[in-house]
Image (spheres, rainbow, N blue to C red):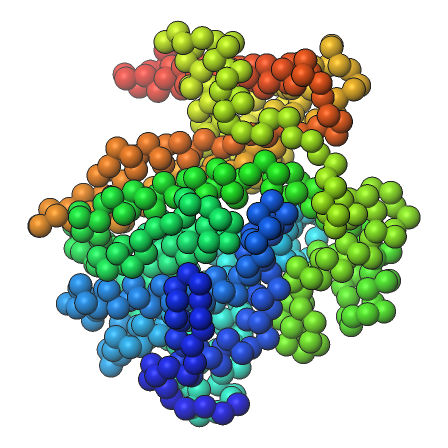
Amino acid sequence: MQGKNSKGKSRTIFKDPVHNIISVNEYEYAIIQHPIINRLHGIKQLGFTYYVYPQAKHSRFEHSLGVMHIAGKIADAIASNAPDKLSELLRSRCGFQDFRQVVRLVGLLHDVGHLPYSHITETLLTEAATKGDVSEKMARVLNEAENLQLKPHEYYSCLFARKLSSEAKKWSKEYRKLSRYLTSASHVLCGEGVGDSILSPLGTEIIRRIISEDILDADRMDYLARDAYNTGSTYGIIDIDRIISGISLTQLNKEIAISIPSKLLSSIEELYYARYMMYKWVYLHHKVISLDLTYRSFLLEVSKNWEEIRRKLSKLLPLIPNNFWDVFLPSTIWNSSVKYGFKIDDSFIDLIMKISVSSKMEDLSSLSRGLLDRRLPLYSVIKREEDVITALSTLVGDSESDNFLDAMDALGKSYKAVVEGGTEACKSLFGKVVPLSEQCCFHDKLPNEALSCLAQKYIESFLDSEYPSRIQLTVYVTPPISSSKLPSKIVLVSNKHSIPLTKSSVMLKETLRLGLRPLIYVYSKEKPNDTEKERIKVALASFLIDLNKALEAENKKDEGIHSDDGMLS
């Protein structure tokens, strides 16, 4: 491979509908040309969402370019707004251009480890590991990711950055510096010590937060704008350049925090609101969820019938693993892309769907045909949060003791309780609501799966006396939109005063609070009549009311144990 030390000079440009012009230098061009990066052309950013929003077929490749572009602009803003802090981000004999190059490479590589159809496949892989259905090699990889507190795709990105760094050393002398930049990028992506990085520990942390940690990051700014453009949504229209222009670093007590001037608060509020609304109406659209659930069922059927599918695939592709889940090993993904010229991306899964249509296994055949032809086996009964609120308001009224909005918040509080307390908290809390709840509480690593299982059992029990066999339901509770860990290291600055961003605005606090509430959907295999629909709504509302009562009982029990005088009440 030929090239020269670009020192930031433009090698080529990409015309982008979101950012207009994205320039790349020689180093970045070399990475973009690599097969492991080109694999991202085949992984759609929004999975099956294009069945609902037809233009949403954009890939993780252009998103990665966008994140690289925004990350570089954030680095420029920090250099302009806080030049006195730059030396604290780097090791000696390294300058701002080194910092900027690492930032851009981390942005480019942050999603390189995604699996086909991204998060859904990753969730199923995690579930399979929990049940012991994966190989020892895959279990070891997932344990390594968990030990580093990384999601599987984040760990894969870390591993691929390391591999690229090793390869760059072999290209030519001109790329040795690129190899060092990639090593520094891998430290950021792996969430580990700086080692031989050009960055200081603070620089590693700051880049991690610039790319994808708090809401004021390159990842979210690009995907909100890009996804809004490709779905026709107006929610993601945010003033990215204005927000970036104010980003700086500020001393907060003994730490350095990312800061934003108070004059840009309204732009930040727009960003938070855009994220909430995009999740509620695009990413978690009821039809998108039904597609995801159908894909989940399909992939599980593939894993059960893998030997039949594998025999057919082996005629077309080399070295197909014996264990289905080993298809998603980082070594399989790397070798298939780099050595054998086929890529483990969405098209690979699509090929499995096409092969499965002719399967003798009826469930596998019908699920694959349903996904290929958009003929889904799930009818949406509860489509949106507002459907639940109306049913709740009818049941409990507006009394202060039983406010129906408290019942809506019960899902978020329950999710948090399972996250913090694990299986035991799950059994203790839900045993008060659903008989045999322990059957659902093995999902302690996936709290939304436990809640989905519990809600389904409750509703089925509620309906059983009236409709013992007619209605077959699927209930799904999403993870919360907002994280329970608020971005405390972003501050709003006015003159010499500063305040944590999330405490600076009632709108921000309320948007984050609403985002802690998971959404719940109910689907059926047969279209219910109006009476049945109404009873399902009442059943779901009753579940939330009883869940809220169980939470209140748990809180009272905790208050009794932790009384003011330290004695048991």
